Image (spheres, rainbow, N blue to C red):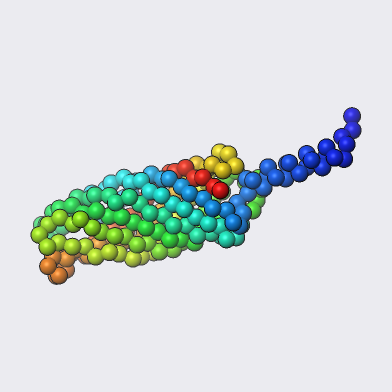
Length: 192
C-alpha cells in the first residue's frame, strides 16, 4: 500500500513538530518549584531545608538566564564568642545557564551548568544589638532536566554559593563566618 504525498507530508510535519516541542529553544520561558537541602560550612549555623522558586528565559538554544529565590529560613546560631540566637537567611541567585544539548530535538535529558552571582539577605537577628550584613558572592550550579511531557520536567541540581556572614553587635564586628552552602535539590519545571 502506498501513502499519498499529502499523508506522507502531514506525517513528516507532525513528527517534526513533536520533536521540536522537546527541544530547548531560544524564546523558551520556564518556572520551577524546588526543594533543597543545604550543607553550611562550619557548625555555627544550624543546617535547614528550604523551598524555592526559579524562573528562566533562553535567549539562545544553549544559553539562558535564571533567577532563583529561596524562602526565608530561620537558623539557630552559636558563635565562638558565646553569643547564641536565631536569624533568617534568604538567598537569591542570578545565573547564566548553559545547555549543551539545547536545540537537540530528541533530547529527553537536558543537562545544564550555571554560573553567576548570589545575594543573601540576613534578617530578624535575635540578640541584644546583633546584626548580620547582607552578602554577595559567586554562585554555580550543575543540574539536569528529565523531560516528562513537552512542558513538564523533573529537575535535579547541586548548587554552591559564596556567602559571608559578618556578625556585628552595636556596630562592632563580633565574628565573620564563611558559610559557603552546598545545596542539593530537586524540583518540577514547567516550560512555556
